[in-house]
Structures are given as structure tokens and as C-alpha cells.
Length: 227
Image 1 (tube, rainbow, N blue to C red):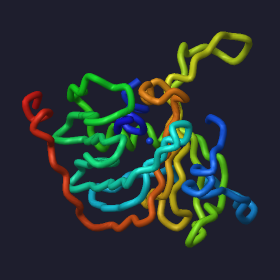
Image 2: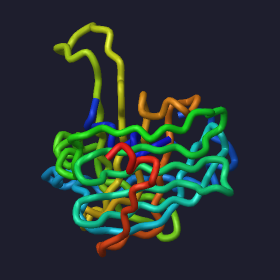
Image 3: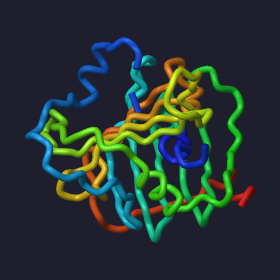
């Protein structure tokens, strides 16, 4: 859907649980057990100020995989999935302290407004990551294999003590960062209300490259009118 995926986790707001298809198996890397966990918990993920990467956005239940870019410059950042020639096309970005989401194309979607959430920065996102729970070390089986640390970020409501209570997972994210560098992101599963356009409420982003040098962040005209 939108950057609303991973970014919106902190505002309650990054992808593919439905039945696995052949397209999924071919598109998404598998995970396998890595070496035994160390004696200490690693530091949580932290998105850097400057970066650029390319990969794929995967909506498994729809059988859709499109090109994906994720770039950051001076603390602003932008995701772009698909394009005018693909079945889905959207951009999510943090720009000058505001979170914008603009979906140009999505199956069954007729309205295409730019939504804006003010008061959202890179620090807001990294603050959410600081509360992530460490799942463990894993290996993403692909070309190449990548040794990663798996983290779970989530927002559950209502906030109640342990015990038998009715709870709703508003937003969940599984974040896989490089074991040698917590600021290198290789894969994210997003699940929850931020994925409302998808029938199964989940989407994947899978990076093929991730470099620590400044990228480009461009505010769409439709969103600039709301700035």
C-alpha cells in the first residue's frame, strides 16, 4: 500500500499471510536458521539519514510483484513501488517533518488523495524501532544469502495487562537488518490496518541493494499542495 506500512507503525505507521503461490515462492527470499544467538541482544534497527536501495514490493495474495526503490537524504526518505505501467503504483515519504502517502494505482481503488500526517520525522520512526523485540538471527536464503537480525515492531490496542483480554493488532512489522550493520535494511513484512487496500492486510518489501550514500526525495505535486 503506502509507506503507511512501516512508517505508520509509529503513528498508531513496512510486507507479504495468505496462501503461498508459485509467484510468491519465486519472488520472496526464504529464511533459515542462522548460527546460535549470542549472549547479548543486538542494538535495534535504525534507519540512516542518507541511503539508497532497490528491490521488489510484493503483494502475495494478489500475485503482484513490482520494482521498488527506497531512498533517504538528510533525514527525509521516500519509498516508490511500481509505476504507471504496473498494476500498483504508490509513494510514501517523510518530507520536512510530515509523512505523506499517495497511491496512484491499486486494484479496485478509485480515489487517489495524498494523505499527510504532520509531526512525523526520521526520529519518530527510529523511536518506534527502539521498542522493537528481538526475534533472533536468521539467514535470508537468496542470491546472495544474507545474515540478518529479525525484529518485531507492533502496535496493539487496547493497552491491557497480561491475561485474558480482547486485543487487536493494529500494525505489525517484521524487520530484517544486516547483522553487521543495523542501519542496512534487507526485508520488511508489514501487516495491519496500514495495509487496508490489500485483502490479506500484508505486504513485503525486499531489497536487492542498500547503499549508505544520499538518495533523492521528491514531494509529488499533489502532496505539495498540502505542505
